[in-house]
Length: 317
Image (tube, rainbow, N blue to C red; front, top):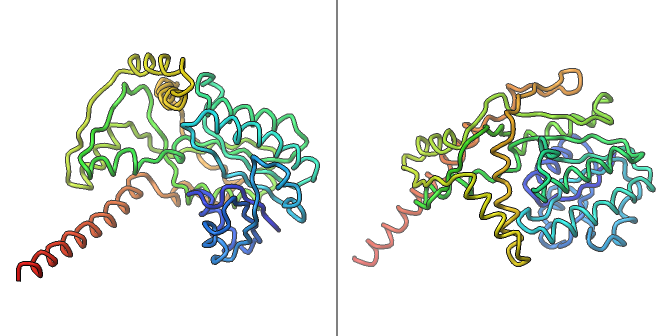
């Protein structure tokens, strides 16, 4: 079975590449910069040039392909890029997949994307979902809640560097999934006939509020977070102001994610054992994810501090 993967150099994409190769699949990764993707080739993957904004580069790459996996996305802060890549280009990609009669297409989306019409990133995700449903393509759409969040950059690093973290009014928790586990679930779906033409919603069993995440990081790092609270109402007002100017569209799109916090509570959903062999207890929980990060980073920081102290001694003596 040959897989064509978009987004192979991203966090999720890298895990899909590794797990595909370990499972014996042949995987072809579409990249815009071959030199930056050399590590994928070193792992055993085939890398080929392709650019979704230059759709003419894509048709030849679909030859002899059974599965297409789309793990790519432009930066959600840029509405212009989102429209160009995640909407216009992927609409054309779906048509090419349909013409090429690809056996299966896998797409990643987010929970309750249909509820956020003012969030352009989620509006685009929902639009692609609708196009998939109306096409003749056999598909599996995975919808998650938290695995796309860069929690290390948002919380762990600011706490270590004593930077301010802004906390909003909390209306609902997040449900985290590790990117490696998402890749595992993705690959398991290829072995299951029951996953075809299904939209699969999977979340962690434990809900995490923002304050829970911050407290966890404080306990693991031994440092106190510098936090300030801002209401959702103020953020929405800032979003409305930013939306009036083209230069601030990226700011507007980021601020509009505050609506995520106003969504109704999402109930966790266990993996369908008839569809997957993966069990929830086999997945990496958020506390373990952060524990491993802080364990590694604190050891690194100690080594750096020790080396700096040694250099100072050398200079003195």
